[in-house]
Image 1 (cartoon, rainbow, N blue to C red):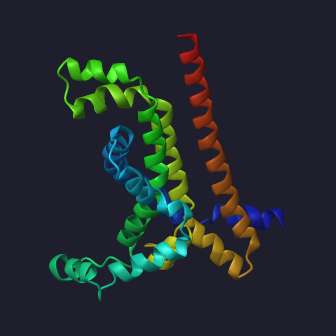
Image 2: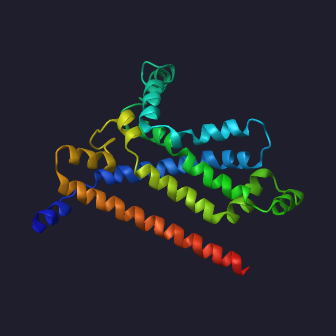
Image 3: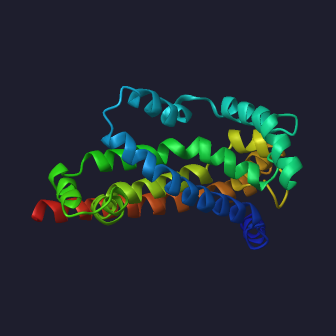
Length: 235
């Protein structure tokens, strides 16, 4: 039995892992670019519409993945206005390919990027921000050179949790991307299919890899945050 497991490990198809990490990397990068301005706005605004925007940005936390996947499937299909536009103008299909996984992941993982960043921005010393504005720095420079460097724990948490959450996606990617070998079959889908055909050994191997990698990443995040808290308490 041990020999069989070793043989399976050596002949392991790493493509689903590659797709998972590629998807998570691209999604995290896109969400970081989009969510820093959004989180900053939510942390600074006094608008009556703030609860509305906060609700929209956090909706994916409570919505079942199948609901998000269903509406994205309808909105991005070739029969929809958006899907037809991209298909006719650019020859790009927005469902059942890697592009669809990226779009779905951005919707599904958005709260995990926005909320830590927003909390980090809200924890900043207001006098420090006022001093930046008084010295002539624009909002862009204030966020880039003052705010972000001073919320390193929140920044790291946002990036890592978004990445890890995207790696573990299942329902959304299955609905809008299917399980196409080499294109949309990520590690979570591979595990599901192994369980379906009762290949529990490979399911165990894939799951163990995902579990151990997630544990290591989160461990270092908490370790980093603990060190940052100690440094702050000393200063």
